[in-house]
Image (spheres, rainbow, N blue to C red):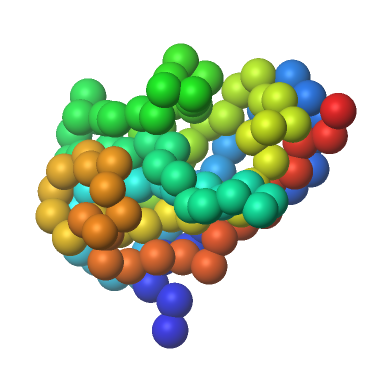
Length: 124
């Protein structure tokens, strides 16, 4: 049974925007850090962004800093990744993961529950 669910992927033209959402049926989801990772075509999985328990507790990969703000709405049990100014290089499957603790870690080993991913395709 999936415990982390991503949505919001799709096809967008270069320069466009998409917002990914991540949610969980677990009531305790809001008590954990949440991270986004991605795997591009023929590439390894890499860290994108993470958020801890509070809005200001965030960490970003250098190549998305300033373009992909991460946020969360604990009342809705949701985490969002707003992706702006997308180039084709951002094409990837994007994965949401629930942390083992409350922190905004960039390390995949600090996450225990992963979604199945949502495809983002940026066309040139």
